[in-house]
Length: 371
Image (cartoon, rainbow, N blue to C red; front, side):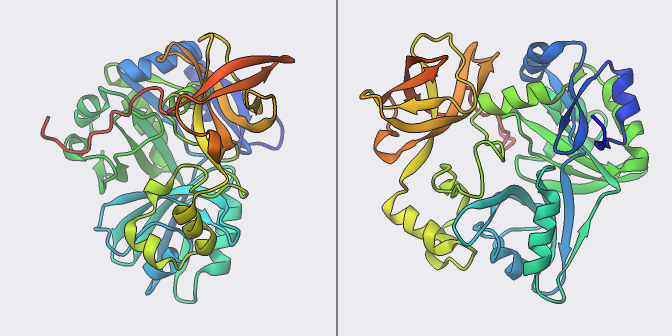
């Protein structure tokens, strides 16, 4: 694993018994002493801690920044209030997805973006090319990002950062912890209630140690991060989303607000809006094997009952909470109805499977505080 970037907390993760692997050009913790299944279950039951500092944190600001960003993503940004977060995609002229990302309105024309680690340099080139004069982009490479996820995350983190208690899903706030500036965002990649904390790298170990001391927390690697997101139907860029996949094919039309569906005005809008109106030739769906046992791995070929190739699995594996195989992939539009029978080619044999909702385990985001 030479020529890989190291996380600033690498020595800390070594102390936590992390096993490392390569991901997105970084040496990343893949699992700790609990193992992938144990870490997955702990996150669903209590609180998982994730070092996701490989992600790209960007600041975009300047007169016209909102309008300029709206030309690059299909989300409606003008209506957003300070502290609001939206999920969207950087689209291309062909309607394909360069990356998916989170956008936070920090203030008027001041935006925070979190993009995928493997895509961040390409994203920055794309942004530089398209942002007008007067709108600047800064890469916050001196910041770490730590996620705190799970049903007990709110109660546990509030003991350390009181603002966490009242922060609802897809909202962000800038505050102080131990005298250090942090950005606390209520979002994540596990389907659970939880947060992401951005902090300057020189204070990352202090934060990591404080989080480790909290009750019911454990460190979680990329292995369980993958099974957690897969069970809850969340896409992974490079697998489920690519430059040849549109947001409509990916079943992400919910992330395109009404005004943008009407007015367009973003890269690839003509193709994407036509697909909203007329449908797309293929669609992302969940797939489950009829035997309830056999995992359907990435790149497994999918066929119709007549034996013709109609799609493939883009993400698949075992879901510890679902307690069975979980998978998502793309199939021809006429075969995307829930309950449709297909065949998956596994080790040279055709295994019967059915189309299902890609969300195998329901999301538990806290959207209001009434309960």
